[in-house]
Length: 638
Image (tube, rainbow, N blue to C red; front, side, top):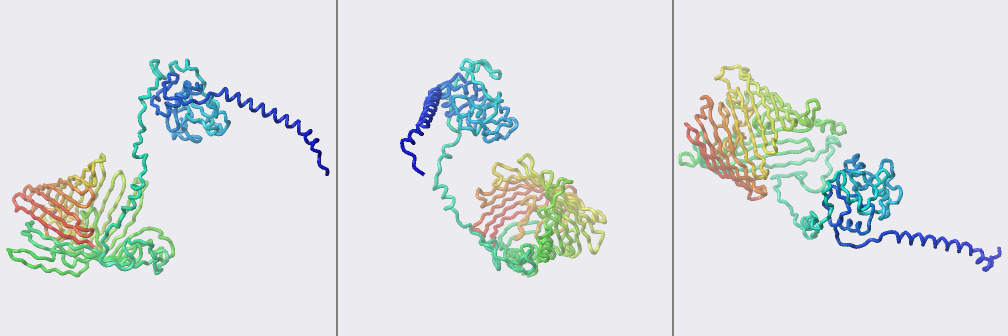
């Protein structure tokens, strides 16, 4: 194909060049005309404006005032007669478009940018111009909210929220929701600094790094003997042994831990002079097989009940009291039937059914209803709830005691009685409930068998008072009233005041009322009396025999008032207390008239594993001899 001559090409292109030049001229003319009609932005200082109706939104920041000045200088008709709200501010009342969206987020951002029902959010682009309102920024008739920045077609609304432009003279007229005397002047002196503190605007990298540089290992006391997997150690836990199935792996570990306590005392308790230096050793032995099954034992080789190894001063002579007791105080196996079943059947645990059997320590209601190591068994049904009873969480424990039950109801014979019952732990009705029932059976004399019932309710009132109310009832012995060893009841009322420093300053008031001969289901001699939680003047130390007021609750009433002070770093404790006790009737030989007691306790650590404790007590017992004592104790925990 032959090439087209140059002269012919030039002739054919001339009409297209002419048309293109004409179109270019028309476009430039239109753009120039539009630019001349558009008001130019002007940098102006803050000025007063009386052409704007502000409604109830009378407080503006410096950025809004500058925009008002710009609007007045350029004569923006879209701002005349409207209140002004920048993103992040809310002016007057919610607009009609806002009423269906109380959260403030509808069709993108919801700060003055409303979308009409059925209108696409990006419909149209007329809202780009600063000299007209356009459908991109429309508000309801009540709110008349206009944005500061118009950025494009993102925030578009329908025509039903169009804002009509007003002249300055119309804008000065009073609005229906605004009094005629309202002055819309803006005073720049009304603008205050941002409420954000200056410190929050400054980033200190050194201070941020110090948080990590100041970290250090916290010293902790390890168990005396630690074999197998470490107790709360770091690193990845190694895979266990598949002895009982892959779903219940064996991770053998053996620990020996406990504490050594040694105390010196001088004083007098209800039994007579108590001047001694005594020591006791508590050893826990724990053989863990799986994560849910273990064998546990406890021995106290330097004491047998309240008889503690040490040196005593008797009639001005030193007497060495040698005590060695290798017998096990507790020895039991505990596990979870659900985990064991799942391991044997290679399945996940179908249920949680913890159980224990052996010489088991049982403690209920902080040791008030039961605190003893007994021969028997127990199992629990945990983590339940009841929609019918409106119980958010509860569990129940069933127990059977077949031997070694200690109780004053059986004259110190720990082989005489058995007990069968259950205890409930319920979170409901804005508080915490504990309840229990036990039938205590005398194997030798059925007339001494009786029923033991308890209930308690703990709740916080008015965000200031934490209260626990407990009751224990004994009934059912078929004996003459004077021969009964377990009847009547005990009411306990425990309160602590929640102060401005609830962890370090805890005032408390505890009271009790006992009638008849109330008994716990089981109570070891070393656990003290049933009133031990009433206050430190009723609580034994378990080593030296510090004096207390009568702790039986037998036909008596009284209470304690005190304050528990703990150091700001929770490293030391000081308790100061005053107590009162009186009898009603004359059947309690250890309470004769009104009794008063003053006591104090101070303890602090000298290392991460050693504690020093000091106790002092004086009791005035009416017609009986006074009791008193001062003691110091060293305690090493391992």
